[in-house]
Length: 584
Image 1 (cartoon, helix red, strand yellow):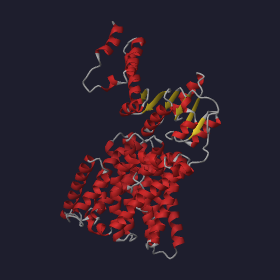
Image 2 (cartoon, one colour; image 1 turned 90 degrees about the vertical axis):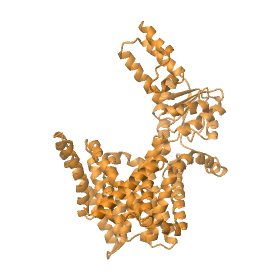
Image 3 (cartoon, one colour; image 1 turned 180 degrees about the horizontal axis):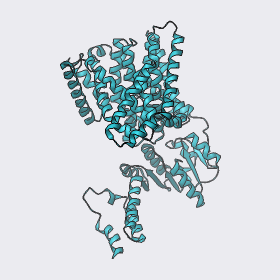
Image 4 (cartoon, helix red, strand yellow; image 1 turned 45 degrees about the vertical axis):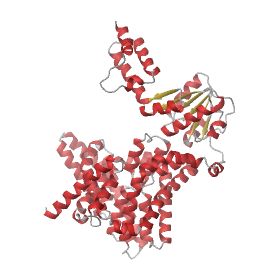
């Protein structure tokens, strides 16, 4: 290993570690930290590092990243999620790519770089979107599910995007023939890898797993990563495309989780090198000179993607403008695959030096802004949807029950699994109810079964009034979105002051906020699971059912407060007496 390479590798790893430490401490995306630290020490910054010294090793990080994404998207999962991801994902990618490409062409860019720029803007960061939504408890919220579905489609688009780059770079006598040849190569590779997914890889991994050698399994994991990349390259595709297809093949086997565990540590280090090397390519002076283009890029990424996603969700999916806006804000950044695509496009001469600098600088800004945009999205969406223009635009009929024909005693907000089961119990007790649901598929399905259900966004006051909430004696809020749950609880208390409001939440942290919003009772799934587990343990230990039921009832009546005690503290003596008194 040459001395210069050793020094550059050591420096790149050191600044990558520093970037993670600083940006994680600030609560900012680590990907942006890698790029920012690379720019600091690169030729355009302090001049301490040269990206070409570590580029080959860094590009292995891309191969491992795509293999890992393929592991998480096996053929079966893609097939199952295709319906939910296809329509919103395809419309978002096609509309964003087309709009940005046309705008770039109007600004004087040639069509090949304009199309590349459109593809760069169309991609979002799957890793960042999932982590931000998980942190906010919104993975299962309507806007969270839509955002993840769009990300799934975007991840799949990286394969044809990478395959199209050599065609856009030119050099062939017939562009139409070159497009056909690229499509044929991709189809041949997909067919070959599909056969491997059924006939070769499962048998290989089963044989390796039977030997119970962790070292052998790690070597075979590396063999699959590199082997799939090389096979694709031999077919005329890129290493990255091959790694992605190889990951999909391996992800279809029962050994996918162990492969993931073997690949992730090495992938993390190599990917840190990749993004640090990308940052080294950034020249702050050039980016500052082109600041109008950087501003246009950032504005375009945020405004165009948010508007397109909101329009698709509100008009075609019929899920409401607020849900669409929040999904759009979640996707309003440049993704890790955009950097992969930009690196490949730059190597083929499809991006000029200035355009590359604009892309890197603008992408870092969108990544840094993402947590703040997502945090502000509920309030922004509420204000925008409540505006007079938006109210006028919503003057149309929604699927399902528009208004209750009969009096209702209860209103169920959310008709997923929890809402349906509450509805079954109310129906069995002879209590009439109307349900509100924002998923049109669920509404159509329930309406066909005779349920009284209305489509709509329950955070909208006119909808609740129209459905007769003022006459209800009971309001049950069973939404997955914690922000929407708080808004509905507050509205219900104001519009139906005599109703008993019950709210469901996934997380302990939301209990106090929902109580403050006006909920008479809050069911926290984390605490309820704890109570059930405690009851099972006490029953197995021989305590009588009466003591266990009294203990569980006391925990709920106290608003779960005894379960929030600091580590090391025991239960209050009176609670212990409930259990010990029965034993004596």
